[in-house]
Image 1: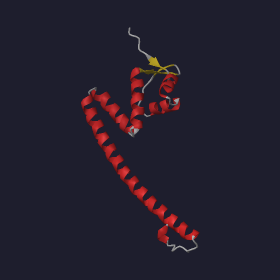
Image 2: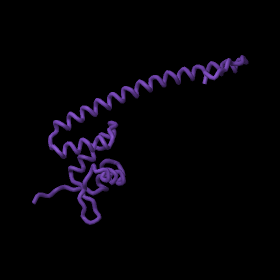
Image 3: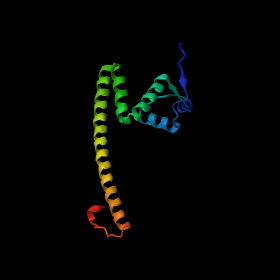
Image 4: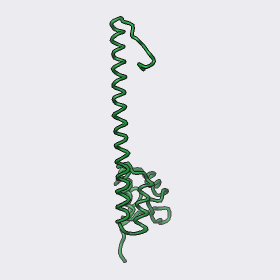
Length: 139
């Protein structure tokens, strides 16, 4: 019989610098499926790899639902073709969303700059003793 390497929840938490509560949450979401030996959870290398992928996906902005979708595809087909096409779709969607957020941020930075300039102009006028032409629009 072949020995299978297993990991405790504490070992995985330390390795990935996350809490055991996070790991249990991923388990509750159906992303990890440890076996149990009494009250002890035993995670296989498959669970370890999935945890690594969950954390990488999270860092890249993928939702847990998107990550679960990829895992489910892999489990159903055990082929990476459909999974890779799905990953490419997710990347395209994420990239599009990030580009829109970037444009929104650029607009906000311009608006903040304009407001800052108006505030500084009014402060200069007040410092010089000239009453500013205050309008509702300036703020």
